[in-house]
Length: 223
Image 1 (cartoon, rainbow, N blue to C red):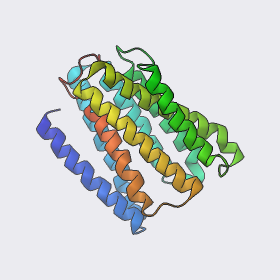
Image 2: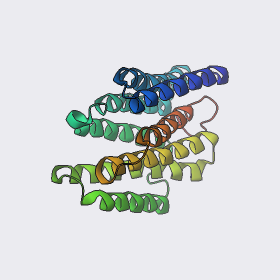
Image 3: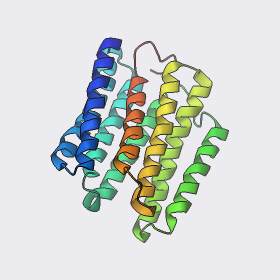
Image 4: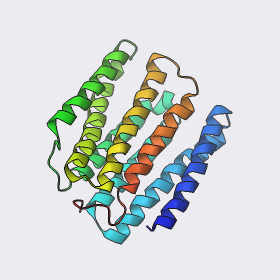
């Protein structure tokens, strides 16, 4: 996808995110139900277009992760009924991203970075543990492990490759951890003011950056 096309799609994604947030804040459910998945569909379009033009497995795995993210987005619009299903969808998204981030790069890309991210994930789980339902404790802990592993691999990959694409993916992994951490705190620990903004904005920044990492000419070691 050309830079001009990517910029245009990025503007559309930004508009969709703003409308989804407005729907959440103003309690207009039809806005949220329409524009939240639309924003993710547009992000998927970036990765798919790059995969079609490049035929690189890196872009394909990112697109697969985004499709699972779309499923998670839809399921989590009804968290009381489908929270575990949404969590499962995002778990598979992180596995797909991890598959992309290990293309041509060892796992773990950096033991030190992996351990550091796992410490952060463990700290979050311990913070939430007392307020988590018993049936969710193991599930949330495993999800935190997968999320931290994905983000750590993205960061370690950047430290090895030093490419722009790897930097975008690493930043996306960090934003994903921030978004999911805030979501977990808001849901299980204490309500966060303007949660729709502080959770959705870093989430879509994460997905957009990860999708941008599939751009042609940016991947020196992703095939």
